[in-house]
Length: 288
Ligand code: IPD
Image (cartoon, rainbow, N blue to C red):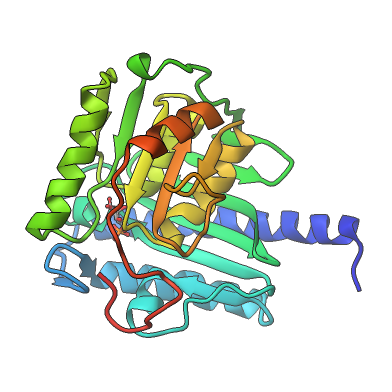
């Protein structure tokens, strides 16, 4: 049995590997964005995937598996292909090779590589690399959050009428879902908040909560690989990440509210009408 100190050193070493891996993968994405893209769709016509998503995920997982053969891996594209998406107590890497695939397809400059790491179902570290501008967000549990090595601090704003709110749309676009999505946005806009933004990458939007550039983020329909790394980064920057019900975050639930403070997160959560999505750890087939 290993001691807490040994584990801490071990996860620190894993995080160093994650940082190198995210930069390397990010360079592959930077090159791929200049090439012609072969685009197809997964669960819905707007849930896009490219060859680059699959190649980058293969690169990340095969490299990490060679270094850490006893660890488990959850990746966006392997899950889409039917690999198990279940969090166990084993050390588990949770990977989004290209977050913002639609942005990537359009060369819209909000695309990231996201690598999270959990042990005994607890998130230990997160690394997010912005592929267009090279910004690196990192955090390890108990050791602070950083952007290019500079310590991060969430916004201290508690007044919702002075808040900038971020969200993402998710893959479902049926009329009932869109009505709820737009209704939620209308409710917040008429709070009134300062503004609502959608940038097309859940992980980078969540990093903006960690930097204090925005006060809150909410979304229904994101996946565990969209939240895992970012949740550590936000918490280590002093923020709060919870379920849209107000309960503790459930990585597999596909629901999240993140904010600079618990009060702000709970306020936003109370405004939201839920949109239901199948859990990440439920059906291993098509998953809208
Ligand atoms: C998606 C993006 C999108 C969000 C989705 C994510 P992907 O990730 O972050 O903005 O709305 O929920 O799954 O598919 O580009 O990796």
